[in-house]
Image (cartoon, rainbow, N blue to C red; front, top):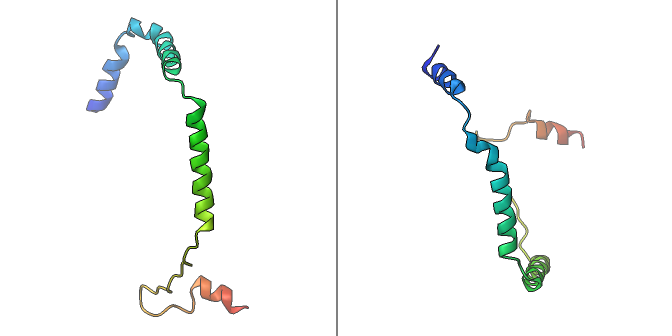
Length: 91
């Protein structure tokens, strides 16, 4: 056995911590307490909705430049046997 195998075997032989039996209830109680302590008002949700609408409308209404890419041939001239060249040759 390697060192990690023996370490896992030692951990497997340990007894289970008795506090693990009550961890589910403690976590769920904390989640419920956190949910009730800071409720968000309707105005916060309204502001988020208006901000999303303004952002969406502004991104489509404002003109943008057209993106164009130059052809790239990293190893010199483009190959005539490249799949893209072979596919477009039949047109």
